[in-house]
Image 1: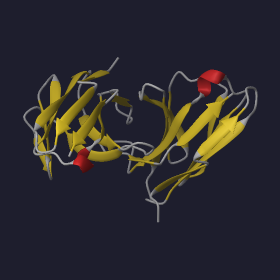
Image 2: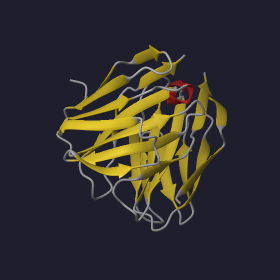
Image 3: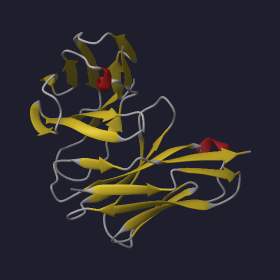
Image 4: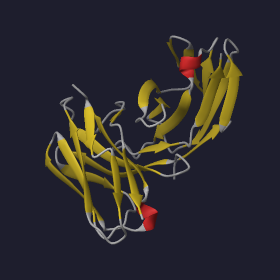
Length: 111
Length: 114
């Protein structure tokens, strides 16, 4: 069974203080690893898809990287509006869009 | 022009009742899903439909029955509600079943069973 573990559970940063969120996964044949952002009271919002080890993607202050066992979401010089829960998910070779989510990292950026 | 919409946003009901949650997407997507997010924020897939056909049916009590009248709608009917059904239910859609398309989520329906 596919598994996703995210760490830390919660992270508190000062504005401008860069850091990384970790997503460790076990999956039988990775088809894709997804990062989503979830604001309180809202549905997850898609950020990135990574397909193979060594791949990187960037969007504003966020950069996602992928190895064979984990993915990192690097946040450079975060702002208070980056505060949210960040969810990692994987789709394995079983396909059919059966996506397994982690429990997320709750990020709080303090002004 | 909301992409994925759900109604109602909040649902409070008593044990034993039957309730439905409606979902509509206007993205022209072929695939739709229902997820359950528990109090620990764990998001778990329940069902997926592709072109009105059931594709994924995870280990979910048969009190839960999805219905897809057309490609743009996927409703969730729950019979004989139990306290453990309290959670936030999210509908989502994606462009297609095959491939690694991102999913677009609705705003969620917070179900509270008393």
